[in-house]
Image 1: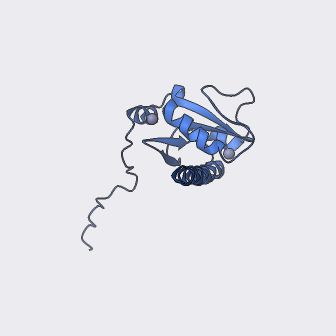
Image 2 (image 1 turned 45 degrees about the vertical axis):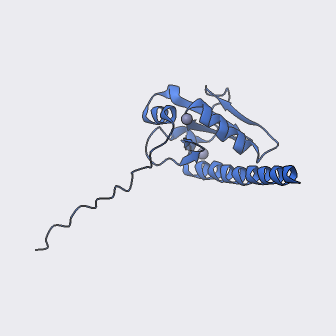
Image 3 (image 1 turned 60 degrees about the horizontal axis):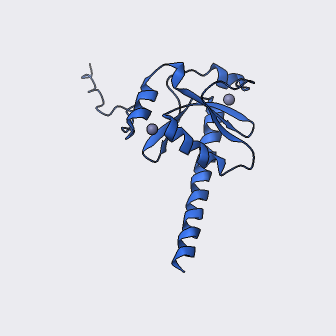
Amino acid sequence: MDPEEPAPTVDANAEPPIPCADCRKALQSNSRDSVFFLLLDQFTLPVVGCRDHLEQFRSICGLTTDGRAQLLSYQPAGGITCPACRRSSHGAGHAMLPVAGGAAMLLGCPDHQSTIAGRYQTGQRTRQQLTDDFDSFRSV
Ligand SMILES: [Zn+2]
Ligand SMILES: [Zn+2]
């Protein structure tokens, strides 16, 4: 008989602490009140975080589009068009994206989570380039 395996000490689900207390509160709350809706092009994705950080998140995602990039605190009139996103609830398995000093949690289906996460990363690169250009312009 094998000796019992020691339980792993690292919790795979442990997330690094989020610096922003408002974001932490929103993420811990299971209330629908803490859910915002990100409208980016044709996508509507429920997101959780504090208003400030979601607004930053939205503006960075907005750099990737000439279309709409809006943040609503209520479900938009058309609702969430993707049935899989609509079914996904406030629970495990959601992408958590760091936003300067805070966080944004995406509540959509895995497909749309990764789509929006990709847009956010692209937006961050775009913003970085804009900042670099601005700095080099100023240093001339
Ligand atoms: Zn925050
Ligand atoms: Zn979806």
